[in-house]
Every structure is written in structure tokens, then in C-alpha cells.
Amino acid sequence: MSLLTSRKRIINRRVISIAGRVVSALQFSFLLLFSLLYAQVVYSAPYTEVVMSADVDVQVGSDDVLVNGSTIGADGSSPDPRGLVHWSTPDIPDGAQITAASLVLNIINPSSGTYNIDTLTAPWTDTTATWAIANSVGVNVATTIPATTGSFTVNLNVQGIAAIQNWLESGVNHGLVVYSAGTSDGVYFSSMESANPPQLVIRYEVGSMLEPVAPASISALIAGSNGATVSWADTANEEGYLLQRSMDGGAWVTVATLPLNSTGFSDTGLESGSYNYQLVAYNMAGSSAWLPTSTALTVTTALPALSTVVEVVTDADADVGIDSAGVLTNGTSIVADGSPLRRALLHWILPGCDRERRSPMQR
Image (cartoon, rainbow, N blue to C red):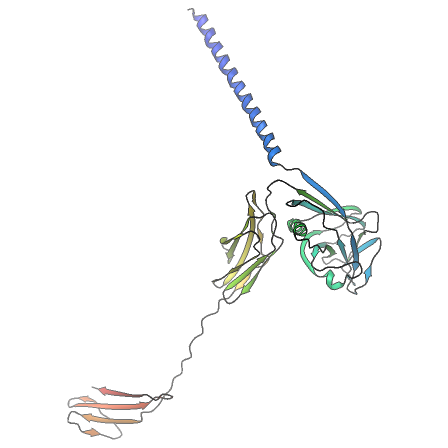
């Protein structure tokens, strides 16, 4: 075999080897792309969006005057009007998970000030709303500055999404309230009587396991002399909760793993110090964001009560000296000695006690 022929065969083998590697790489890339597409089809559930218009709204101030018209106002100056808005609970399939929610207002008069949007905890209508009801707020679902006219969208926070989920599951829905966070620059938006009513936009998914959202609220209170009671609003789609605490700004320590639908825990045996708590909801798909308590809880462990020591001085009521010969000595002084052997006998009646004590002294 010639040297040239041998070299050609070697080159051909290398070409075939390289071609095989290219084909294998293309096959792998195709399989990887197919797997990713298949994973998206299997695990990414399509969402559904529902847009609802307000069915009840009203403006009420600290003077309890109700305003029903084409606009609703909120302002921080007297009489501090607030805008109450309600939507009917939407017909969403059982087991649906709310993934996003937003409030759409048509701003007539914008404001450069900050406004809060909270849930309400008491029922009302456009004829029975009061200032007290407007102040019966639950959780904050959004904070915004309505600085532009026209359609204005406010995305609800995780507490707001959990609140909407709770509306669906519990059937209890008292709507939202828009009110000033301290500004006197009023805002006005179109009411349900107008062509652009307040809208609530809900996005949900069905048929997929989603990570739970964080609970809407958490609080901690002192319980007894060395304990704390931690409470929270139950979220949706959770399989359980993990509760942690931190003492004096130290590391987080897990104190409890709790089952689904839990809403509280009693933490006992605490030492004196400053405590913070944080909570996370979890399921097979993952976990929610950690929800911490807003303020630290100071625990001061009570010291055990000290016994009272009372000192009483009392004089002997009888005494006598005696020697080894049995001779008694009664006088202004008593002698105890070893040579000759002499002893002094003393006696007291204890105050408040019927028992007698005799104390011989020997030297």
C-alpha cells in the first residue's frame, strides 16, 4: 500500500468521525429543544383574565355625608373624603389560582400625592356607608400616586392578590377603599355611573401547581411573661407554613413547621430580648416570599419573687451557770470555762412560736 493511499484512508476516517459528531450534536440540540418545548406545554398553564366593573361605589367623609355621582373623590383635607368601591365576586372555577390583579381607574383630577388602597372589613352599600366603615380597613393592597389623567392602572401587591384569592374562596368581599396617605392634593376618578367605571382585572390559572402567595398579614403579641403569639391571615394553595424567629437581630431560627390552613402559633419559653418573626408558605411547586413582622417584639422575662427576710432580736427569758459539781450560779454574769468545767445555759421563747430552744454554751 502506498503512503498516499494510507493518508487518504486516514483523512476519510477523520471526516466520517467529524460528520458523526456533527450529526450527534444536531440530534442532541433537537432533543433538547423538543424537551424544552414539551416542558413548556406540560408545565405552563395558560392564564385567563377577567375584567369586572364596579357594581357599587360611593364617597364618604368624616362628616358622614355620602356623595353618589359620576365621580368619586379622595382627599386628605377636611372632611377627608374616601372612595369606597365594590365588585361582585367573579365566577372563577374551583381550584383556580390568582396570579395577578390590578385596579383600573379613570382619573378626572390627578394628584401628586400618595394614596393607599386597602381592603374593607365591614359590609356597606351606597346608602349605608359611614365614616366608621370607611376606616375599617384590613390589608393594604397598593400604594400609588395618581399623577396622570385618563386610564390609570394600579397593580396589586402580593397581599392584594392573596386578598382577592380569599374573596373567591371564602365568599366574603367588602371591596376596597381609596384614601389619602397624608396629602391634601385631592384625586377624583370616574364612578360606576360614568362610561368608565372602576375596573378590577384578575388573572388566574387552572390545572397547574403554582407556588403559594405570601399571607396577607402577620402580627406578633406578647403572651404571658415569657411568650409570644404569632398570627397571620391564611393564604391559598399552600401545603404548610414555616415560621422563623430572630432574637436581638441574630440569625433566623426555625421555630415551627405548621400544616395547611394554620393561622397562628404560640412561642413560649422566651428569654428577655427583642424578637422578630417571619413566615413562608410552601407547597410542592415551591414557596412564597418571606413575610416578616413589621416591628420587633420586646419580651421582658419576669424575675422570680424574692423572699422577705425579717430580723427579730429577743432577750433570753432564763439563764443559769452550772459547774461539774452541780453548783448553780445566778447573777448578772454567767461564766463558761474548761477548768473547772463550767457551762452556761440560755433560753429564749421564739416570737410567734410555741416551741422552746435551749442553747448550752461550753468552753
